[in-house]
Image 1: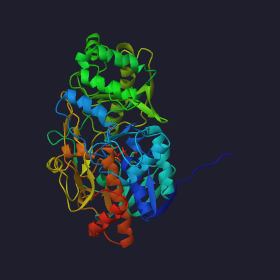
Image 2: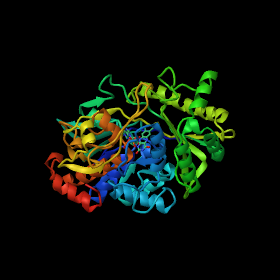
Image 3: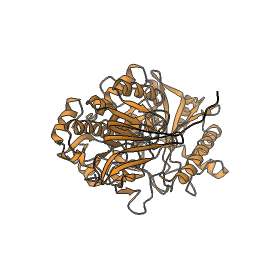
Image 4: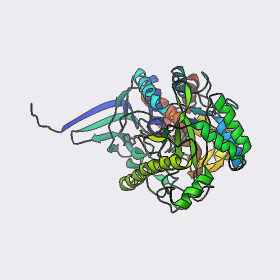
Length: 491
Ligand SMILES: Cc1cc2nc3c(=O)[nH]c(=O)nc-3n(C[C@H](O)[C@H](O)[C@H](O)COP(=O)(O)OP(=O)(O)OC[C@H]3O[C@@H](n4cnc5c(N)ncnc54)[C@H](O)[C@@H]3O)c2cc1C
């Protein structure tokens, strides 16, 4: 039967609209719905979880405080041990811990019930299922493959968003909208001011496309590392061997000498946007995959700095960088096959569904969290959660090592509610990596646990504001804190 199509116009209305079903967005939607709001969650891709799942970032940093290493040798030992460490105080709980518990029950996260590790490992593939189940159970309506394309404003108040495709034009009206797009797309379109990249030149940290390599014989790789203890560090290799024997998570770093050799032979692929690679400063982490109850040492996940000097909010620049990163993943798999012992029979198993963007817009809110706040372990009267991750800033030029700076004070700082309220705009909150923070502080709060903490706080605040018919800035923040505490969040 042939048919023709007419474009439909329609409008829907919800208490709370969450735009972006990623790391912070799925938690925001669950929190708003559990606190009594009707919620619509929009996601432009075909799965939930964003960078956390489709981006294959398979480690949640840092539900516990993480210390900064003094030097590279210590860094390697500490880093590889953190994934199985229950030391130090746990500062993030509630929905995040509940989610990890569910993943643990089905063998999709490593660890113990009700306790997260300092770097919580999980299976990003199964994460998509667990997230969609939790969101559905909370009663959230989800629209996948749906991109918000415009905002509806009345003066400085956001009234909702527009979704426009060739098939339809939908106006979504909402009491409160939460921008969890990563890039702060909604807030920027609503007229909120933003900061972008580093204060010196506006350039962002490099982006990465996670990829997985299968067919690995890791015992051979480790034997090589043991035989080259001068290069890798005796203590580190010993730690790694011990962890592997107990089927615990391990972290591997670049094979510097192999990279030097490949560079000489013209076999080492150069990242997008830079001229060369320095094996001594390259940020590259390799880990085994955790799946169905154990670490699979025959498949390794690779996270390397791959694309520099581009603007992730510009479609043309993002496309060029994405194509280059996928090409680089394929070439890196070839490099491993040719040069790294244990990888002789390996193959590129898959690349992440979405590219990993570390930073772009940081929306200017009523308060901007600063490097000094993180260094002081600042406590704020309007804190909506604690966070204790290092300020992890990858070098934007590709010439220096990444900078890891430890949180001061108690080893955690408060994320203030004001850092989630875009300055001058009503009915709008931001959560995730685009909250108000300076370049260095964003290096800490961009992490997944903090993104989820801000997601939970915004979802809860949105539901309260709608119920109480109050503006966000009129909310009693101590009442919000009490609700979060009652739901087991640490404030
Ligand atoms: C390579 C890399 C490695 C990292 N490593 C770690 C790590 O090991 N541990 C850690 O804790 N953190 C890590 N991080 C940081 C962390 O993963 C991210 O900062 C965090 O996941 C971002 O969460 P988010 O909710 O802000 O964005 P995302 O999870 O990216 O979610 C944003 C969502 O919004 C959707 N969206 C965007 N625009 C629209 C629109 N207009 N309409 C509808 N949907 C839209 C996107 O499709 C996406 O699903 C890493 C980040 C990167 C990039």
